[in-house]
Amino acid sequence: MPVETTATELTSADTEQQSDSPPTDSTPADALPINELFYSLQGEGRLAGVPSVFVRTSGCNLRCWFCDSYHTSWEPTHAWQSVDDIVDEVETHDADHVVLTGGEPLIYDAAVDLLERLDELDYHVTVETNGTIYRDAPIDLASISPKLASSTPTPDRLPAGVDDANDTNPNETTSDAVAAWTERHEDDRIDLDALTDLVETYDSQLKFVVTDESDLKEITDLLERLRARTTTSIPNSDVLLMPEGTTRDALDEHRNQVAELALTHGFRYTPRLHVDLWDDAAGR
Ligand SMILES: C[S@@+](CC[C@H](N)C(=O)[O-])C[C@H]1O[C@@H](n2cnc3c(N)ncnc32)[C@H](O)[C@@H]1O
Ligand SMILES: Nc1nc2[nH]cc(C(=O)O)c2c(=O)[nH]1
Ligand code: SF4
Ligand SMILES: [Mg+2]
Image 1 (cartoon, rainbow, N blue to C red):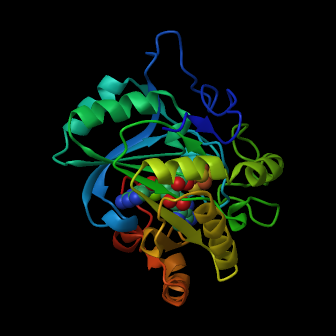
Image 2: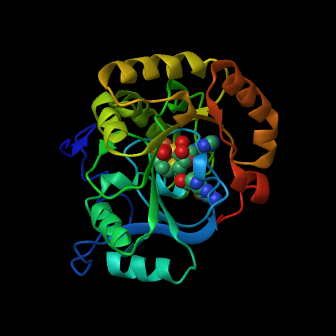
């Protein structure tokens, strides 16, 4: 059994200090910063279409320019909730599938406490992770989305929330703040040890966000390196290509191209069902 590993030294900036609402003395030890908890259809991956309760933690160790959950990465917002409270809220929904996502849920020790409680209650739990951190926990499906070079934020590829012209809000992300993340994101986005431990330990899928055709070489190279390190089979049917896009209009522009790339390479295609159904609506 692999030991718990993190791709990088997680700093307090990754955990306690993620926002202007850090934990206080009265925050329980097993609390997690929760951005949202909602009931929807799993929109991505091999369980697309399955009714599920989503638990979204806030805070991430990476900064993809395209992050569709800006308020868990670039400008994290949340309320601290104990594992007991989270479980109580999950149980108010009539579902047997839970999706733990973020942000990056595995940056938190308490994510393991939550996963253990959900396991005791017999939920099927998918963890959506960027694959830079391994943790030993009851995870039914590790939905791993390793981040490609095309995810790295640069002055030419800024997250949608950046608006230097309107700098009256001191908490708003500026282009300087983005530049500070370029190198760190690039350094930390792939950790082969963590990826290997995840695929060896859990039933998993590798879900790549594809921006265009130029991403495919990096995907096939990464798979080659990963397969060379493990005897665990990583069939192409567990490799999913997902079009980048946070709105129906954006997906309309290139979902067909990504589908053709999946056909050409023998990978699976995953829609973003929730975006197709509800566009960029909150809590979906
Ligand atoms: C917000 S992330 C949270 C989990 C984890 N941090 C990760 O990146 O896998 C949830 C999923 O959304 C995907 N995602 C984020 N932004 C996206 C975008 N603009 N287009 C397509 N997928 C996106 C991620 O790759 C991941 O599979
Ligand atoms: N419906 C729906 N399905 C999802 N699958 C993964 C999601 C995520 O943000 O991790 C997500 C999400 O945000 N909504
Ligand atoms: S790793 Fe996931 S949560 Fe973090 S910035 Fe990228 S898409 Fe967003
Ligand atoms: Mg999402």
